[in-house]
Image (cartoon, rainbow, N blue to C red):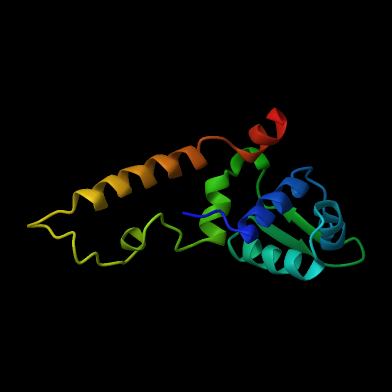
Length: 134
């Protein structure tokens, strides 16, 4: 598992939108010191994933579809890294040739346990809790 730069940008974009105000991409990009192009790309993925919504018009921009108290790092990670796993054999739909019903792979099962703990931790706190702690 790797929290990519794009996933980090997505978390920062969500943080900027946690005020419940409609905010423009240019304002977010400036505050987070990222390019508008990258901010738009990230916003597009977050919108497609259902976490943000665009508002058109003069005072347009983006806003969260639900409160930051209902969004976790895991929610953002799953949108930005839909095939994210700590090992190739743990990706959704992957067939691990060394992990068979008649001969289970101990390494596979341990990595799966670790991934489950990691995902549980990523989902443990809301982004609002994290923001307020900081």
